[in-house]
Image 1 (cartoon, rainbow, N blue to C red):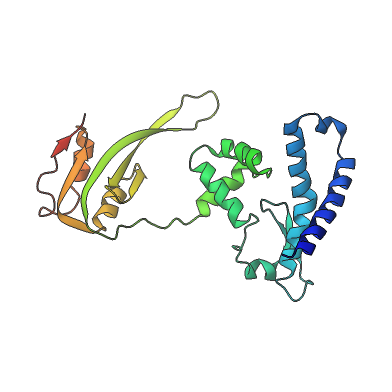
Image 2 (image 1 turned 180 degrees about the horizontal axis):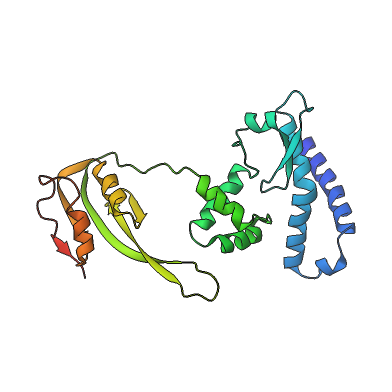
Length: 240
């Protein structure tokens, strides 16, 4: 970008800022936080969509197709079906790839309801919890694999609290997790068979050091790992 182009951008943006300032209620200009949120709202509702529409319109020869709105982090952008395909958007989605990643990061660590609240705070975009639930249900995660022989692993269990109708007692359900040391970790919710199947599909050393607590359920799983030649003595280390 040339100095002249930079100067043009600054001058045009200064004019845009003056117009937006004139159309902002004075009550939104008394605290820095409200100014910050107001500026973000202007960017997402007025500035971002115009810039985004310009960028995407350059990827298509004709603009005569029926258009639909998509929700990226820069404000709503209108695309035709041809544009959406050319830009790599998944069929049936209305969320941008980056916004999808933001949702998936949040729902991996908290409830869908909290993710709805937090994504709006962080990005300014409201994604209903039901939409985020469908996103996760339709998302295909690649199965982790190890590329070198595993020599040590750990198995443990835990409990997660399930949501119940308001006023009813919470339910706690068990899961099992397995970590191939210095490699990857996996967890399976009430599905020990899938856990055993996964680890037995990995590259295992002839002798494996297994780490677990004294719970019989842990060692019942370890006994199913590998073959009789692979596991010589699982209870090498017991942590209670």
